[in-house]
Image 1 (cartoon, one colour):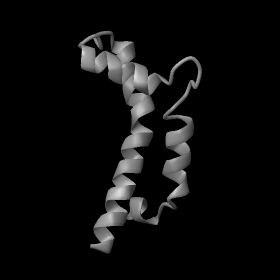
Image 2 (cartoon, rainbow, N blue to C red; image 1 turned 180 degrees about the vertical axis):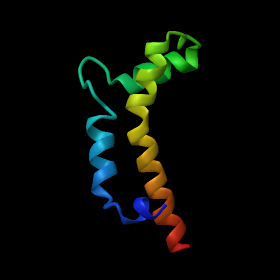
Image 3 (cartoon, rainbow, N blue to C red; image 1 turned 60 degrees about the vertical axis):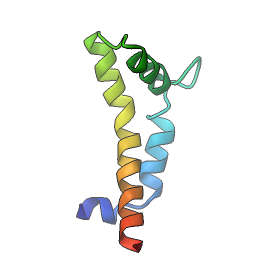
Amino acid sequence: MVLLDRMPMYVPVVLALTLGLAPFVPEPHITEKLGMLWAGALVRPIDVVDLLWHGWPWALLGAKLWRVVARKV
């Protein structure tokens, strides 16, 4: 948690907007894989790994925002 608290906010934001949304054209992988997850079509191992790879920056950003809000309360 100390590393998360010491990390500047721009680091998870930049990661989420670059790696989290890559590739930008024709559709970001994260939205494609989340759609597959909701449809129940996320069955191939490469799709699961792809979801994890493009999803961890968003999870990091969420954890950072959670810590910022929790410290202010």
